[in-house]
Image 1: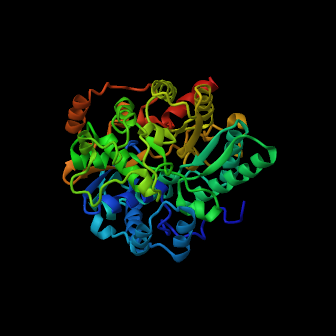
Image 2: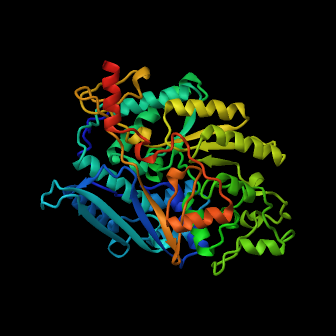
Image 3: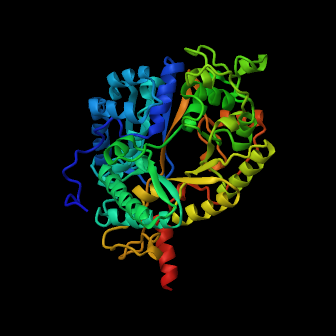
Length: 506
């Protein structure tokens, strides 16, 4: 570990436009191509609502948001994208070169104290509202979430340390790889700060080197954060987010065809075999699979029904994969399930999801080995459990591990843990855990219509409640509530951990 243990030589906040998740850039690329003039809004939600910011933390957050206007793509970053992310069009890269965030225009903030004494220590609720063209506002999500988390752990919960964090990431990564897990680091949005994520990736790189020497099956496949991928020479990882499906459903106001429309335009933008992991749960996986098995339209097989998956007012039509990839071959009739290399599981029961997907691919006669990416609140134990279930069902599992790496922290006073203790993050003096914030920013409207997400777990329903209810009725959605799906305590609570410690002591 280097001498900069406190990270004090690093500037506050965000200082690279690439300090974001790859799928924000891929979606911005698609929005530029098809929907450049659509206006949207985003809403911030703190699922851990009892974990509030102080007035001082909020003021720091406002300052950092204002500074986002100074961030732009550098020449070295442009060259990196050209050589590494070859799926980005020249048109998009030219756009990104001149792109600037304009927080004064797009972001509104407010602070509502629980009890207003005028003190900097007053605790309160934060509101972040984003609005403007989708093209101009899509990149705010990750920086705003990362900055909000940083504000909380800079001012409100300061009882943690950088000490041993690289070593702890090394131990976590080594254990995952030793057991055969292929995983990526997904921790940008809820990281304690930039330096924490930096330490984590250093630790994971050390673990990856060990894995290579030992000949283990597991490996570090990359990071969702494009800046850190560039910095450390690892792959940027990601495809698409719920936002793409939510936005298209909202724009078209056609939830019955939204999944297929989103898939069609995605393949139309990037081509077959590129960024080919499909997210299934925006409106529930069973609904998605009805679209997933449909044949992608081509000039040869296009029918009147296919007009329902065209977006009115889109800047250009979605081209078939062969035209995108520059070939002259006659497009084959293939379903989206055949075209996409796999799927991502992000809500509900992962083991049930494995069974659903196995039954689906079998019923479609698809024998090719497909990938399942698990990305919902993972730790070592869960990764190993889901890996076994997926492999036994004939899938290639990979994992996007986020909060467990960059924000589940040991509090001050505890040394490096052994493998058996790695999930034990209790304070020695009071038995309490330094709990991460569970915060999200989701698309809330597009072109004036509410944008919603249903997911495979009622705890992750997002958006206007009336629209959620109406869409569930329209789609025949069957309500699901996963036993482990309480988002308010997904990463534990200080009170619960203290109680657990007391019980164990007794």
